[in-house]
Length: 269
Image (cartoon, rainbow, N blue to C red; front, side, top):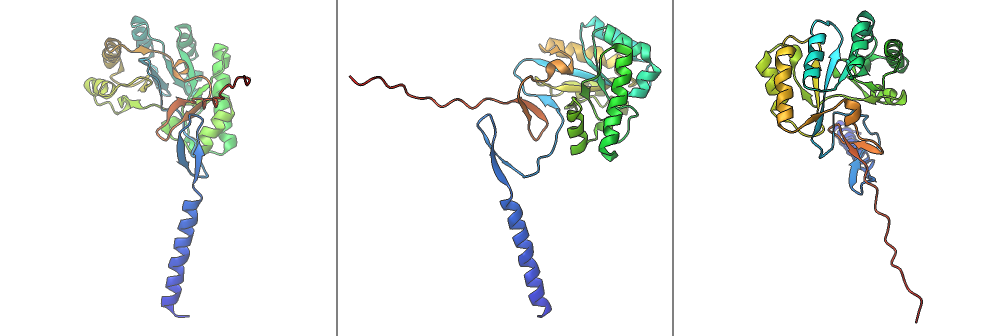
């Protein structure tokens, strides 16, 4: 068999493989009655934001390194009567247990940001569970309450990170509005990042040790308040009941399929 013939067979085999891959896609009916094209393997996604018509949103703070601005942040949140969520790394909580206790005492919730701030997607499933366990146990020792929300360090995750965290009883949470405060680009840039596009159900990301947080946060809170938004902790923003997450990371409620209507018939006259 000549080379040209072999090349032709190779092309045909490739086309056949691609065709089978397309056929392996299946139509699945969602509980809300819509029909979506879905692959056999579905990617695990965290919650980035929430589908709601209510004018509510959440702001969140990741705490992994310093603590200098934390008291100031808490004072500002008190001033605006805002409760929020702090995602804590275990070594930060261990170093500043008095601040962890104060967060909770002032009405804020504490989420899990891992024990050592690793690249979670590079860990085994056993290591992922251990990162979650150690941080949660430390927080529980300080506050009396375990963590139920998880945010992966660096915003990095894969299917295993999301799936394992949910198996351990967590909701895996990201964000869809990034203040970019860690870049230290100035107060005005932070305000612009957080206010240029705001929608119900958004989750905003800050860091407790960012350089301009104390200058920018009051103006951002004023903007949200004047726009009619109520700011609530992430656990209160998340939808209750049966939910699903679309390809963008937005959490939706599953709408039950209406029961078939059976026409009543009377007895014959």
